[in-house]
Image (cartoon, rainbow, N blue to C red; front, side, top):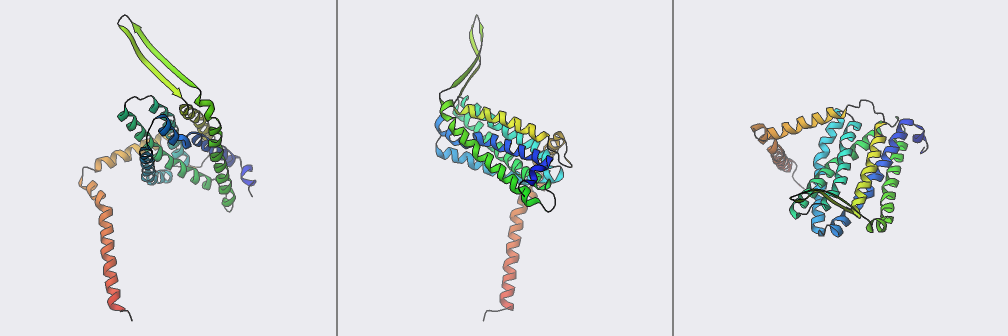
Length: 280
């Protein structure tokens, strides 16, 4: 049963993408905490705050990603969420280049919010596309293979990353670009990459390869990425415009008001049942 999915050419291409994707993101993300604490000097309170922000963004964006997968396709969502996540991992190298404490923290908050939202879409789309490509009656074996390959790649990547930790800790790459004129020297670029910065760059390169493998996967009904992006911008703009209208205020208070109504109905129903069926 486990060999059967590998004989499906299209599903095999999906498995290669899943393996490359999980290896790419897990090569660097397990070391985020070490990077923040050891290299940037943040305390565990700040690290946990960034992780919480990322999880909140994940939860808030999940419904939006679900609507997009229903309206378009899983691969279309992956072609947006996966590149955003990879770019955020590469962007972690910028945290070590920013000198101002406030600007650095703001940069990290933005990256963690974007990573949380993007990861929700990528996880949802990968699971859905694996289900969609599974033949009727054989989804158990297909999903099992997808989960098995994903788990192996996600487990091997940080092990290899840990083995390379000593190697990269003794290396450093400096890039300097200066403009010299009679008035003095102006520094244009002064980048210093060290230790964990190399992990983020390598993870980005591996992520680009994973995106290449995604391009050869075929999904019925897939739509161009630009159309999905346009749809997201239209929905976001409409949401923000509604905040200043009566409709927007009504939408904001709809959930609390609904919960209050349900609570009143539940209490009324409980009192009626208590009068109709008194306890013996």
